[in-house]
Length: 250
Ligand SMILES: O=C(O)[C@H](O)[C@@H](O)[C@H](O)[C@H](O)COP(=O)(O)O
Image 1 (cartoon, rainbow, N blue to C red):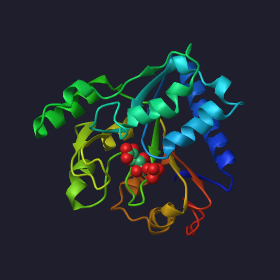
Image 2 (tube, rainbow, N blue to C red; image 1 turned 90 degrees about the vertical axis):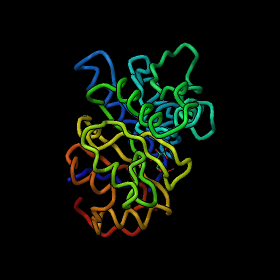
Image 3 (cartoon, helix red, strand yellow; image 1 turned 180 degrees about the vertical axis):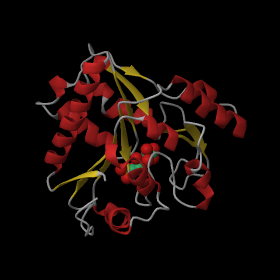
């Protein structure tokens, strides 16, 4: 059973998303000295800016210096490339913070990119796995119109990613969403996280929301996440994305 929150106003969605994240931060900081969170790419990053930076009632409650920030998936490009999830997060969120704020961010090691070949790609994933904690306090996720999350894509060609039981970070090749070369958290990494949170907005997500929440097509990575980790999984969606969903219980 997942928790789904549907909003008609963008400002309410981003505010409640921010409240949710700050609550997870505060709970983590009651137990220990830092808050370990991972971020995905795509439209989520703009929502995070609205929630955590632009929202004047929430931004003072974000204890950035205690955050350890990782990436749920990353495109294998230099960190300054327009396609880099780290680069986008830096530009949209981190660069907007006052210069006095210190944040601990853990991007992919870009010095490993120049070597070609499968072995080196596997090594980038393995090296990223090395720097990850055993358990993240919160994993922030997007959902693509094909039902992917992180860089776990549906379909036979990418089944190896969903079938991974050992590696916590894997190399995703031939991604249907460019760029084609990526690293991604796998299900074992998501399994050990304390909480998972999806954000999905807009009419381009209508058909896939229907497939996820009404048809529960278990070939979709997002449905697998809901089924395997439902209790700790929350969705923040808007009316437009949820326009075709009939289900009332999730
Ligand atoms: O690096 C990536 O491509 C993302 O991490 C990816 O998994 C994203 O979260 C979804 O594709 C949703 O993106 P949108 O919200 O932009 O549709």
